[in-house]
Length: 380
Image (cartoon, rainbow, N blue to C red; front, top):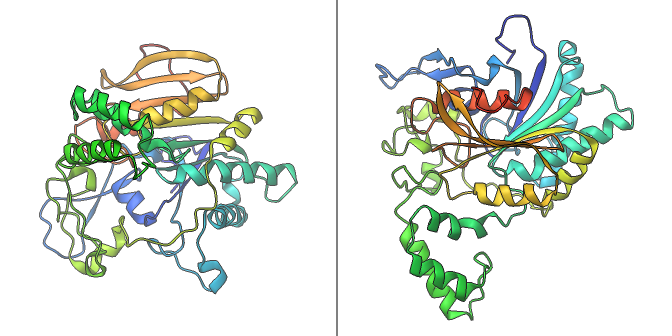
């Protein structure tokens, strides 16, 4: 989708996965279209323009991955196999071939983006493209950097659920102190022989079970992952805005926006992506890492922790960034050209619009932070 601003496109973003139809990205998240919610009668839904689309600031290549998600399919058996590394190679190969057929994009500054589990693969993709450029692989890609939303990076992010839940008053001081004492900071791989820690973790899950883990201000949503329910309508969970419950589609149109598919087997052969952030920082690529601050999935606390462990100095200190004159989140920038930003009262897995009139436009402004960090107190 070409950039919509006047004067032509100067940036191109390849937005990749995970597990979603590219069409869902266009109409439910960052694209220029949205469903018209009024007077829907069960037939083919009509579309309207989304004024806050990321295409206002960049051309976007929407890539549906891994294979078998959305409309993607494989013609040969080998290509149908799924693993982290295969996804990396497929994206790299696709982009080189795609640019051969779209010469007008070759001069654009290229960024690679994604969210959630894509935090594992995107930094590796960026490094592979960079290495390809260094080896003279054609066509040359004008790679500038990458952006990630709530990115899984160390696969240890869930360890921050307990301090987050305590800070948000989802669990009591007593339970928090007991968890610290009995689990000794390990909340993921709990030793089943540790009865006290297991008891406390059970109490934790019971205390937080009434919340939507992706967006704790929202109603809790139960997902039916059975084969007959794999293509969900958009209003089967009318109170679950973070699950994109805004419009009821008749069955034959649900596949177009299928975001939550049955579990797709995928070999997790990239253990963590932290080392790739280290390598890309040394090479001088810029990056934008953003996190919703009200989700229990891929917590911003964990993201902040691994960013700090890169050990780069802060060049633009922690400060609010604004939209419509209101604080929309907080941001800081480091000497490795990495910007970290939080999104106020927002969800923890994808750049869609959970609630609040400013949320949809928030992501456009966060995207612009990645190109031109505003000075302190200035609206993004």
